[in-house]
Length: 177
Image 1 (cartoon, one colour):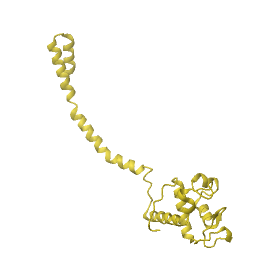
Image 2: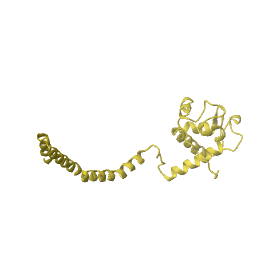
Image 3: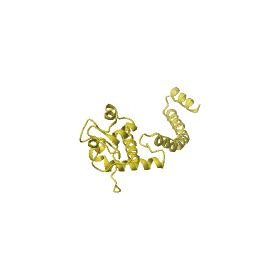
């Protein structure tokens, strides 16, 4: 109310003194909302921690394994991959046959997109890919190197599927291998 009366006084009188007092009254009225803005700032600051937690939790960058067991399986799969597969399939590619990479689009095109199908190709081989299974036959289709146990091939298939689904992020080098 004071603001309105001050404005009407300054418009009805053209005296410089009255219009100066009206401006002073307006400035006093504008300065009063400062405590309200501080209250709003405190409110927004109280929302920051829960909002940040929600963003981090829902972020695709935080695609963490469900359990410690799953983390260990991924690490073992990565270790097996570095030991047996990375010679031809570095970064999910294929240096022998470029159309047979381990990326999702090539796996789908070649009919090897499910974990079980990846297991079968790894165990028995397919095309230029040698088989690594202990009981792999025929002999010419199988690797001449060390064979992998059934459980190791299951871990590899799981690891390859997980990596393909994530677009083959970098595999960290480890001195444990």
